[in-house]
Every structure is written in structure tokens, then in C-alpha cells.
Amino acid sequence: MIERLSTFFVRTLREDPVDAEVASHKLLVRAGYIRRQAPGVFAWMPLGLRVKRRVEEIIREEMRAAGSQEVLFPGLLPADFYRATNRLDDFGDGIFRLKDRKGAEYVLAPTHEEAFTLMVKELYSSYKDLPLSIYQIQDKYRDEARPRAGLLRGREFTMKDAYSFDVSDEGLEVSYQQQRDAYERIFKRLGLDYVIVSANAGAMGGSKSEEFLHPTEVGEDTFFIAPSGFAGNVETYQSTPRPVVEREHPEPVVFDSPNTKSIAALVDHLNEHVEHPEGREWKAEDTLKSVVVVLTHPDGEEELVVVGIPGDREADMKRLETSFQPAEVAPATEADFAKNPALVKGYIGPWSSEGPVLGEESVTGIRFFLDATIADGSTWVTGANVSDRHAMWVTVARDFTADGRVEAAEVLDGDPSPDGSGPIRTARGTEIGHVFQLGRKYAEALGLKVLDENGKLVTVTMGSYGIGVTRDLALVAEQNHDERGLVWPESVAPFDVHVVATGKNQEAFDAAERIAAELSEQGLEVLVDDRPKVSPGVKFSDAEIMGIPWIIIAGRGVADGEVEIWRRADGEREAVKIDDAASELISRRNAVLR
Image (tube, rainbow, N blue to C red; front, side):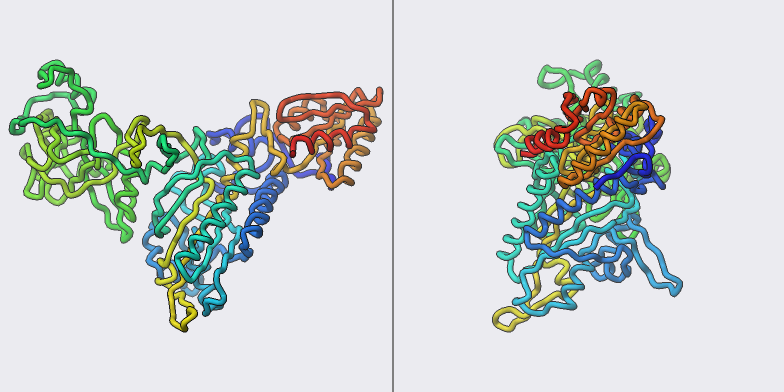
């Protein structure tokens, strides 16, 4: 197949889009692969569609190899599907809702567990029909509050979601492993680096969940790796309580601490005015920081809560959201503090159900939690619930009892591994795939049962397996570019070869067409830059930003019977005879593919 740039629907840009933050977003727009339509919503241009389809075909091939069959569900689904599993409320404002002219409620599907389950329920009734694995590649819709980074976090995106249906838990284990293995093959073919981490199932539910994370500095997830090799998303990290210094502690003492709303200011004040009992300097880790957050429960009710964490750590909102799920978690605003004057910003301390431990204000009705690292018997310097005053010797379990422990503090390099193998290291990553053992959650809610070998009705057990197609495409671009543009791997490039004809001599254009035809006859897909009156510099710049792996330049050398083969990945260029150009390029390409 041959396409020609003189008639191809593409326009490259010289400047980065003003809203682009990451390389993949900048380059996919500038190279003419996608165009923004609205925040988090993009149109796909011919170049982009070609890459997207190649990614999808890799997925399809590996899904077929894993025994999964392709189906396609609509993106518009009745709200009752999600109401049956109580997920309509769980999604909250995160989904697009609408009504038809008769008032019936619909949603733009954020995920399809219910639709798959109900379809199988309608058609299958016997253990003889199982195991079954079916999948689709379909667009999904989520009303992201802050869409960002182009295709990495959008409101409309393409996903591959597969579902397995088995009679027994043992069957689910087999199906799960088949999908997990297929994912490894897919990501290797895409050329994407990945780490498999233990993950939180979240609203999906289920007994087991693993994420495939692509390590990248632009990632929204943080994961940890233990010396043993065990890895997990920080949302699943189980904290170890900090050691408690065994000694008698005085009763709490309130002291003046003007202008110490920050932990740093408080520590400076302590070191200037108070001698530490161990003869050392005071540190942030000696203080208890109170973080005020708003929980938005699935029914829409908002609740203000306070979480105490060690002063040397920041709160991790994702870990807090996992602790308080299905509620959404957000930092308290100035308006929240204004409505609750008992919360003295910068000087909040703990309290029990009977009232404040210290200070004069009542905080009745607001729950106080502690981070899981904070042990009973530990002693802290903390707010006294009065402006410009703090307290020391406040001891957990002696002076107050919290409403519970939550995983709240950020996880840092050097923290102890949950498996006891030593200190962890952390890294940033982006989710490229997620596999769940759903178990019987959806089957029970929707009544998916089959007759077993003994004629008894049993509930089917399910697995769910997702890949973010468009996100993964963006991450391939993120991983494969240089300062001049995209550098697609062979597996997903929009074309195999980019033939560039330069100059005013017709012989160069004729040579380009001849070489393109020879390559096409050998099964390669070729883009020919046959644009007249376009300078070589512009053509080379376009070739670089588009990122097709192999480039053949038919220019001044044609007069001497030569063209240049240019490998985009390493920049190597070499002159070869026109008659040998097609066979030489195929030989070099095959050597790389091997």
C-alpha cells in the first residue's frame, strides 16, 4: 500500500499546543496524529488512526491466542444496568448521565461489567457452556474533573476490556493466568516497559487485583519495590507503626506558639524555646500534623474529617481515598473552615468522643482518625485547638482515642517493606493494564447462575481484564521520541517506510515512486513525500516529527544512481544504489525485527 503526502490529510505544526504538558501530547498534535476537540476529547487523524489500529491488532492477536472472542457493546447503556449493582451512586459525578425524550436514564459507559454479565446470563445456563472469555475494544467515557496530559487522562478513551466466566474458583485462576500472560506478550510487542504490582480493586471489587505500570516520570501513580522483588501500588502499602520510646510521659502541657501554623515554624519555635528530653534537636517527626479533608459519600452527603499524620510526611490523597472508599476525598477549603470555627487552622489537635483533649473549643461531630504509622503510647507535639498554642506530651490511647486508623501518609524510599525484606524504593508510573479476579460480585448481583454437573444452580465466578488502548499508544510515544520528534517502534508505526523525494529534478520523484512500488509489492506500507515545491528542510523536518522508522531519501544522489537509507531511531544514513534500495532496506529492517 502506498499513500502520498500530496493528497494525505495531515498538517504538521512547528509550535507546541499551549495546553500540552507532556511530550506525547505535544508531539502527537504537532505531527498531525490527533486534534483537540474539547478538554480531554480528541479527534483522530489518518496517521493517528493507523497507529491506533496497529495497537488494536496486536491486542486482538494476543486475545485470540488466549482463547478470547471479540464482541462489541454500545457505549450508551441504560442506567439500570449500573443501578442493579449499586455502582450508579458509586461513580458519583465521574460519569456522563443523560435522559432520552421519554425520560429514561442512560449513561455513557465508563466500564461494561454489567453489560457483559447480563449478556452471558441471557444466553448461557449450563456448566458445559463454560469456561468463556469474551472481550471488546470500545470507547469509554468518564467525566474527569481535570483531564490532563493529552491521551493519558481524557474524558473519552478507547479500552480493551475482557471478561472470563468460570464455574469454579480453580477455573478462574486458570483464566486469570491466561489473560495475565497475554498482557505480558502485548506489552512486549508494543515495546512498553512494565512492572506488575499488587493493586487496590477499588469500585471494581474482587479478591485479587494487579496493575501493569509503565515506569515514567509523567506517571500519576507511585509504586514501591521491595528487595524481594515484591511490588505494589502505594495505595496498597500496609504501614508499620513507628517504634514507641518507652518512658514515662508527663501530662499534656499547653504552651504559647505564636505564628507557628506550619510544621517548619513549629519545629523552629521548639528548638529555640524548649529543650528536648533526649538532648537532641526537635524534628518534624516529633510533631502530629492534622489534615482536614472532605469525604463525599456515594449518596452525595459531604462529611468533614480530620486525620493526624506524622509531621515529617505529607498526606497522600489517593491512599486516603482507598482508606475511605467508596467516598471521594478532597482537601478542605477555606469555606469549610469558615463553617467550622472550632477547627483552628494551623493549630488543630486530637480529640476524643467526649470532646477536645486540650483547648477550649468543641469539635463534636467531626471524626478524628490517625495514620496507621502512629502507635498507641506514642507521644506528640500537636495543636491545642486554640490559635497560637500547641501542646506537648499528648499521648495516643492515654489522652485520646481516635475514631480509627487509616493509610494516609505518603510512602517514601527507605520505608519498611510489607513483606519484611528490607527498605523499599519508590518510582512513578502510569497504568497500562489492570487484571481483576472479580469473583462472584457481579454474578450474584445480576443473578448469573448455571447448572453444575450435579444439576445444582451455582453462581458463576468472573475475571475482568482491561488495557487502555489510547493511553498505551500515548505512552509508546512518550517512551519513543527525541528532540526532533516521534520515533515509532516497528510494531505500531503508521507506515513501515517513508520515502522522501527532494529537489526540482523529476528523476528524484520517479526514483521515489519506483522504490515505493517495490517496497509495496513486498508487503510494506509506504508513505511517499511527493509534494512539489516543498523544500528539503521542511520535508526532512516532517519526516523526523512523524517518526516513521525507516526513511529513504531520493535527492541529489539520484543523478549518480544513489539514494540514502535513513534509520530514524539512531540517525544513521547510508547511500545505496537505487536498484538495491528496496532489498537493502528490507534486509536491514528484518535484521532489526529479529
